[in-house]
Image (tube, rainbow, N blue to C red; front, side):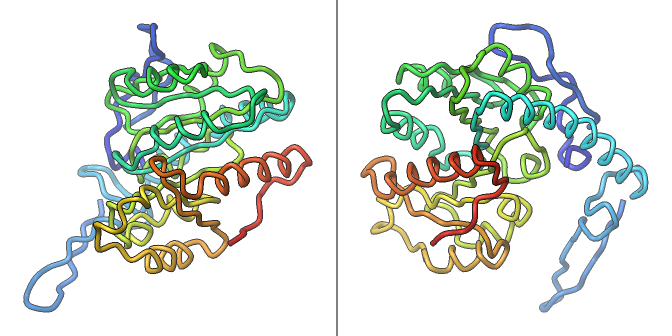
Length: 285
């Protein structure tokens, strides 16, 4: 949450604009002795699940509730907008360097002709990723969050206004590279899609459980690198399912194309279910 990471208030700006589009406010200390005389410093044991120097757990809980309540009102407005226009929105979340943008570029290239697609890119600075997306011919807008580490519902609402997506279109939201705060912020999307690169650890779902619990799909990305790595695919799958028994898991590679047909199939199935009025796509292995 922002009460932990210190996201900057009033820092987010849409590309080409100097006007901030959103603002939000940016302890319990537990020592647990472990074997060998070492200590485990755990700052997430209080009622708020976090610690900020000089701020009580009660105040942190109130701040979190206020922040998320305001965000949820914007997210609900986005969701109504999407539903009224049969727009299907996905929120792509991951650590930095997971290959989100490369995977998204290949996804856009392979989508059926006639599929209207739009992309909202989130990064602290630069428009590099939006520029890469525009090279595919797809409309994209960059949101720079400044000191902020996630997109929120208010930012997405402004971006959608600028994109003016057609009815029945697909919107891909590429969130800021971060597995913490984006888990808590609803953007009005149909599904969160967590991307885990095989260059990361198999235990990432256990280290960042909130994100994988919130996701409906996990894409195990950069599978082309597996022959060169000591990465246990089955352990990664088991860890993700331990956190979220309903999560769907696909292994993909933007470089070789492995799994991309299954990924596109998931998108079409999830989109059809959403348009038919089913809020959640069931797990499928």
